[in-house]
Image (cartoon, rainbow, N blue to C red; front, side, top):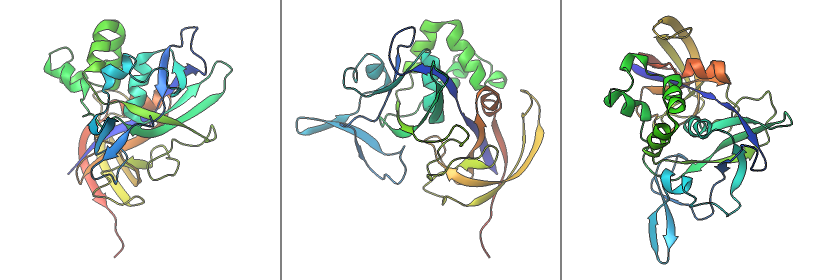
Length: 266
């Protein structure tokens, strides 16, 4: 059987200059980031930087939040909300709505090589959120209710994602790792080491599409067009639900088993 999660393209508020409440920088890929290891995928392997003749692990989230990359001209845009940046990094892309109404499209451009720690799992282990209530919305609510605890929780996930500005039209889907725009409800992310992009996969699962706790039939032919660091294993997939808050609400509820059928030519 397969195991499914959901993802989406967040839409967040940002500005091209800091100030007026926009003080959370989104960083482009640093020039001193050296990726090593089996790197067929953009978000696996190890990341280092040179210190003299030595390679040392790349800065973790806490160091970057504390200014390790500041002043190097890597800032692409500034956001209002550090929680927005955190979820944007997990999702790997974003639409940033600028003060003049324009939309800046951002896509994944590498990460710092640090391990990914699922903060939702930490909240469950600590008894702060019941397992059956866990969703992205619930994590966000926890972070917004207690900003200091939210910041500390984010810093327990040392991985940090870098972005690049994309020349995508407003109507185009997020850019997947295959290099094509994703289609809501039809694109999925798979383990790149095990699957070829473009493979059709028939997804059969009962999912909470309308609300937490429901189990609605989802039977759909989808196409492998993307990857993600948490998507590991032969029957593991991340279903793309589109852009914005409504897509995010659905995507954030999905952690479900189902059937995973790969279609191959005879």
